[in-house]
Image (cartoon, rainbow, N blue to C red; front, side, top):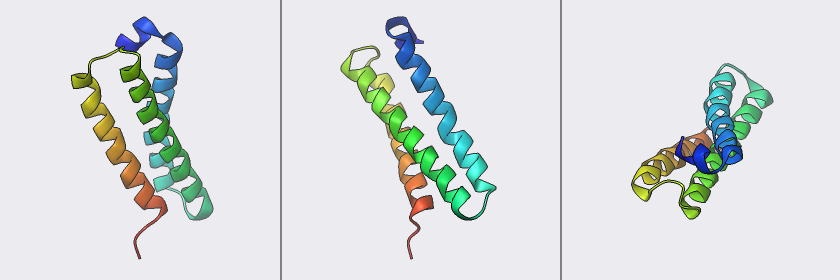
Length: 90
């Protein structure tokens, strides 16, 4: 909501990325083969996009660090977990 007050387009992009990442993870979890990996890759891209958008939000001063830092940390963890789904350790 704070972002939307300053930049409605950025807020829409953030909502789409925040919806896309878990949606693609859920769908990929039920798939097999290359389709599964493709969906996990899309999820990782969306999560990384959201992390960047949160950093842009900070750079433009749309929300305080105390609100953004926990969100960035969570999205960063989602990125790491999703990366591991794409690149499991042997």
